[in-house]
Structure formats: C-alpha cells, structure tokens
Length: 345
Image 1 (cartoon, rainbow, N blue to C red):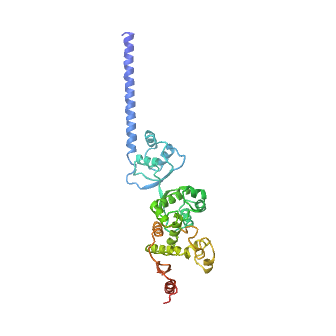
Image 2: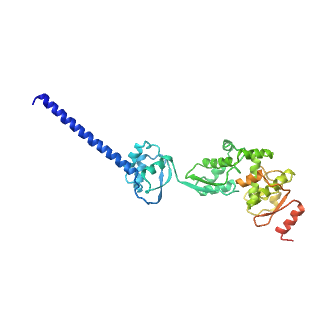
Image 3: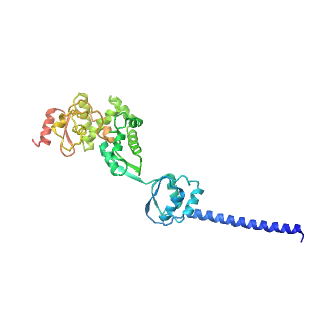
C-alpha cells in the first residue's frame, strides 16, 4: 500500500469517526431537547394543591429553580433553567408572591412568573367609610401604614397629580372591592381608588352637575352627606331632595353627620355643645355645603345627589328603623319628632 493510499484510508476513518461523533452529539442534543420539553409539559404531582411561592427582588433564575425543586414543585432545577433560557425569558421572571401547584406544568409556572400573575389580596371598602377608616383597614390588612396613607391623602401635589380639585382625597376614594398584590405601594392603592371614582363619575354626570350649577366637588360633598344620613338605599333620592330644597331656600342643612365629622375624637354621643360649635363642617351653624366631603360615597348616593326626587320636603326625622319620616313644614316635622323620637302621640 502506497503512502497516498494509506493517507486516504486514514482520512476516511477520521471522517467516519467525526460523522459518528456528530451523529452521537445530534442524538444527545435531540434527546436533551426532547427531555427538557417533556419535563416542561409534565406536572410533578397531578392533583396537588396550591402553595405559596415567593420570588424576591434580585433573585436569579438558578436560585428560583433551586427553590422550586426544594419545594417539590418541579423535578429538575437544571431542566427548568435550560427551558427558561431556551424560551429566552430567563431574565424576565418577576418578583412577587405567587400561588402555584405541583399539578401545574413547569411551562405553566414559568408563564405565571414571566407575566407577573402574583397572588392578589382582597380589600372591601363599604360605602360611606371615611379616610381614617380606610387607612385603618389597609393597615390591618398589611398594606399601607395608616399615617402614610393619611399623609398622601392630604398631600396637595399628589392630589393635584391625580386631577382632583380638593384639599384632601376624602370623597374620592371610591368604595368597592379591590384586589392588590402584597407590598403594593400606598400611592398605587390610592391611585386605583381615585381612578375608579373618575370612571364612575362620567362626563354625563359632570354635565348634570353643571346643569344644577354645582361643581363635581359640591356633588361629592352632598353625596357623602346623603350616604351618612340613611341606611335605606331607596331613601337616598328623598334625602337628596330635602337638601336640594334647603339649599335653594338658603336654609341650613342641619345634618348631624357633618357635625360629627368636624369633631375630633368623637365618642359616639352628639351633644348640644357640638351643635353650637362653629366648624367648617357644622351645618347647623353655616349655610350651604360644608367645606368638603365627610365620607366616600358610593354610586347610588352620587346619583341621588345628581338626580334627587322631585318633592317639597324640607325636613326628615329618623323612625329608628333605618328609615325616615319626611315633612314639608316645620309643624309636620315637629309632630313627627314627637311621634318617632319622643314617642308621644
């Protein structure tokens, strides 16, 4: 065999060897890719319940994958890491608190983390709560520190940035059920409530306020009084009619809830001295509306303030069953007071 033939033979053997290696590498890579994608589509434990899993700010993919494996949510941190890199989302996992389950596929879990579908906590604010009460609810739920919340609600620059023409956000924190992630910034929570108010108070309502020659702030203030005056939703338009009629006649509104709002550390017992103390909220002493809302009214009270019932009522008195007796004259009113308050016929 000549030298040339020998070299050709060696080249053929080397080519075959390289081909075999490349084939084995291709098979290995194919098997690895198949294994990774099989892993990504197979839950570790079908039927498993949900558990909380937290990604902390600054945590990298490898740490997250290790914790997932330690918590028995996935079977392989290596495969999870490789799958995330293959999907090119390895740097897009968002910090937060999640509810996940071993019954989910790793692919579904990864999608949850990338889209930031964090666990949400429910907060319900009843109609008629004021800023202090909202602050207490949020603090108890572990969101905003009470004083921080109240400071923001009285921060003129922040209020202005929200497009609200008022010195506080009282009245504009719309009462409803909200869902927020844990550790949501206080500003974000307040902004969500104000934006909800703006969504409810439509342009049609703004136009209606202008027809009544009242500002949005006036309507919100009036609605807050209506909200606090009755526990019966059907009475709101009637209550509204009384206040509109009194305003038209330049009569004092004489609303106890406004007096109470102006009392610091109110103990639950309104006294004669309270009624005689002049404050920007004491409608027994001042004419017209108080300086601002006394609570955060719901949509029904806002609607009542804008569209009151058409009546000649000027007075109402509690029947002590959440409803009221309405009267047109002081004589009728005095009789109602004797009947329902003094229990005299």
